[in-house]
Amino acid sequence: MDNSNGESSFVALRKFSMSPVRNRDSYHIANKDQVDFGMGRLSFSKPILPPTTTLTFRPNEFILVQPIEGVIRYHLNTNRTKGTVGQLILTCVRLKFITYPQPENGDKTSELESSLQLPPFNNHWQSEEKSENFHEDVDLINMYDIRVEQVQSGSTLLTVYCNDFRCIEYQIRNTELVKSLLENLERLTSEQSSMNVSANNLSSSTHLQGVQEVPCLWYQLSTEYSFRFPQDWSKAESHWLQGKTSLRVTHCNDGFHMCSSLPPSFITLKYYLTDSTLIDVISRQLKNHRVPIVCYCRQMVDAITKKELHGCNMLIRSVTLTETVSNIFIQAISPLRVIDVNALLPSLVTVVTAYTKLREACFLYSSTNHFLCRIGKWLKIVSKVLSVVKDLYKIVQNEASLVIMEDTDRHWNPILSCLIQIMLDPSRRTIKGFESLISKEWIYLCGVSNKPNHILFTLFLDCVWQLKYQNASEFEFTSLYLIHLFDLLFTPEVATKINTIQENENAASGTLRRGDTKNGLTLRQLTVDQMMFIYNPFYVKESSRRLKLRSDILGLELWRPLFLRWHPLTNHIEYYNQFNPAEFIYFNSLLLSLFKYNVKELVTNEEQEHHL
Image (cartoon, rainbow, N blue to C red; front, side, top):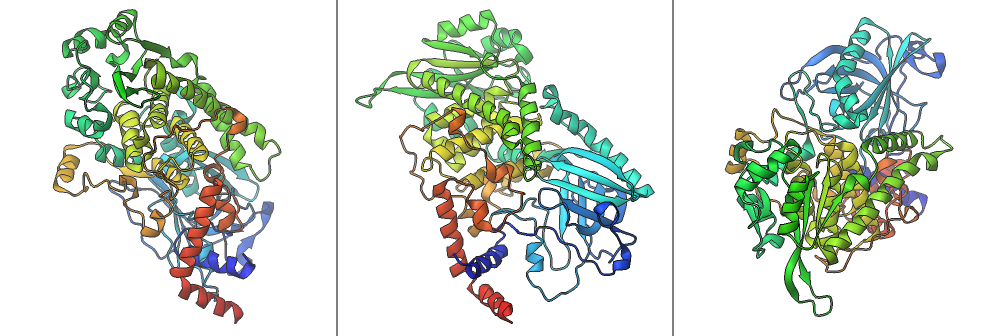
């Protein structure tokens, strides 16, 4: 592709918000007398232009600190020498930056180049680019860490590290408003920051000024893919539950009388585990009254004739079993393997440490000489998880039923249970099946009221991406779909409770279009052009072929399209080149098709202006 075509493609794709930007940050200096270059950074003595836009509030949102003028924003992932000037506002749920109106300079592509959008999704659903102003939100739910530094020029440097791997710095001239902003921001993020660092508090919930920030992904999936009632389980799990006479759906936890962190209904053994046994015997002996749950059951098949055999192997997740409960299951299921996953996988403290080093490496990717050393621990953990999944998968596939147990049943068990089911069940590799799996294992079986463990969920998505990378035609979705889910985890859905009576009434009346999940709930707000980047054209529908899984660290890849997506890019080809070869070829051809059929007039106009 020559330079002219590359430039035309870039301009065309920016219209569809599908191309990385080359210069995400820019600033305009109206008068040199207003600028001070002390300490090698820009600082403004007074606002250049007053903001003219009105802030749209969310429900229960209010401003904590009055807007601060003349703030300079730097995206440290891209370029430390370029900044954007605007207004900074702190509310009870987000930190909002609004650029000042830019004067007309005759360059119609400047607005496109200042966008913070990445292919094919917006970073935040609240963010939008207008002709004069650009709004950028950093939600409190998306803040990983903040740092404050005082410089000699009389300014404060506020650096915000985001969960979505952005790194943003604000240079603010010291005033009383700045002091108030920092105090309020520190107070609002202190509890959330401690949750990100402490492995023991990763599942806690946070309440900020009476407003509960619920991840959009959790809210949408728990609303659409419900596992509250027996009919929900029978419908969602019918592809493997139907015909299994040894299993049943119980409703013994109605009203959460037995266990507050389990759904009212779940799947259990039919003959050996009656409701009275679950309530009076097993729940009273296990931690937090959590009883073992049957997550999946695989019908045994003859390897040669492919005929179904008598019996099936179950996958069961549980907290650590006592000797009495273990004996009950050994008598009920034969053959049976009981494995303590805590003995096979690293501690949560080790995972948090590796994740911290990964983030540091990604933030400093362009300048560090020890990038591979910093990401090595994270890749080792991914390798270890996939190695354990490979062994456990073989047990359920060929040998016996399996009980995976850990202390809380909320950390490693969701990861292992999901990955084993993805390996065993082709329907879990579809968009709808994958979303239903996340809702079951991560939301309802971990406790709807618990805040998600975003570090472990990122690890889970990374493992799925490794499987997707090694099996290009076995998943209905592309890698961009996984990035989309990751972004939704840090996009807030303001609500007082995930499942309320009002929401159920809205769902029943059709407000939420309940049951309309043909394309997956998380894709409803995407355009047709964006959806084309989601579906995998190489997908073989519910193929019976076994997935390939190479778990050694030499066979793994760093998830660059996610971890390094905010770094400088020359053009869209450079970003898509980070995907596997099949996806790169597809994305490139798709971009060229959009360029050819959808934006021909725009490209023609841009080329004419370029020649003038």
